[in-house]
Length: 124
Image (cartoon, rainbow, N blue to C red; front, side, top):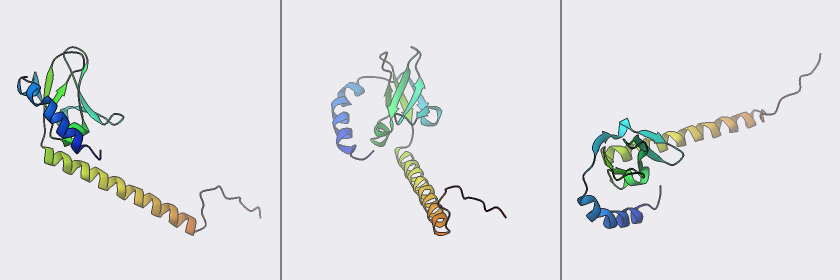
């Protein structure tokens, strides 16, 4: 996700005249779109049978048009860019907290002599 600002500026500049002349087929709330973690993008079904797609990077650049790769339709994604960024920040913080907690739990286990390996039971 880092380093996208130059790409955003180039994309916005190259697409500005094209986008200005095109109307969106429909408006859809971002919350109504499906998120695909594998490719870091949101999708929505297109009438042609394919999917409208918009990436997280596009959304971070305040882009709101999701093209369909199979036809000429565009979907306008309705969202608040500032709220979207804040939600990403919250996710990142939550992931970091979980990572720290897992690291602390592992360190505590090792300090107590539990290295995670099965322990042999003594026979009395």
